[in-house]
Length: 347
Image 1: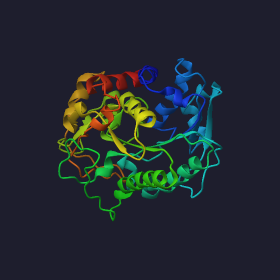
Image 2: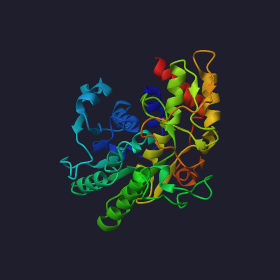
Image 3: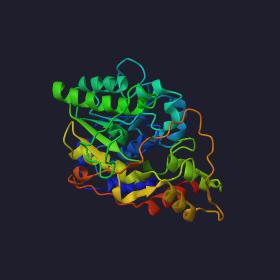
Image 4: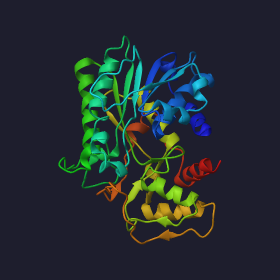
């Protein structure tokens, strides 16, 4: 991951906006949150900002997160703040300059078993964090990590721009994720409109890389861990669904492009259209990268994990021209990105 962080901070961005600032990162113990924390801490160490960025990593379980951040606790600019964003309350973090809100259950594995825990951090949690930042003396920016799921069932799912919206059935359990992300975005727009709070919205598409957990439940993580364990890849579908896979360092650099250079209250797609693969093509690619020979795609239909709710969308490919206008471009194609991911877990 250290190479990924170096790639992110090498982008020519106005990083000085973060110098000496206090930044709250939610979901810090998760995949994308972990990248955000490490990127912020790396800025001063790399000589990119004059003063260290004070990073407050907001997590639900501080004890478990200390293991994930082993070594960072020696950095005086880093601290853990235990808080459950399902609480209907405002965290008491004094005078933060930025909030990067990446706390969310993002895998369909959890939608059926914990729909309340899925939607609350995106709704009441977002409102609490917006209020926390609004009450600070000098609020600089609020980044909401939304999702491509906000688009719902669209007629044309190739080249989705930020104005292409389809239907989400609010009376379905799986809607807990998409509808709460939609509401989180609406809150960001409302707080900007009414209170002048600088809010920024990113919509990541199928982001992968080192740091994903073995029980993540999304297809790209499941397939990688099949390969790492030397198992056949279990195909739960016909493999025809098409997705645009974006490597973590590309996605996170996109987040910072939006936070530091984007237009407030305007959503930005963050994804790699050139990383488009079908699920079957992804499996076949990973087989070529497998550290052990003889792995194949197992086409029987295994029983889905408890609570897992499959996506109804056959194709989700972003149009990222809005983000490209900020000077961003994805750099890592899937063969390179998935190779890095596999090698990171083997190290």
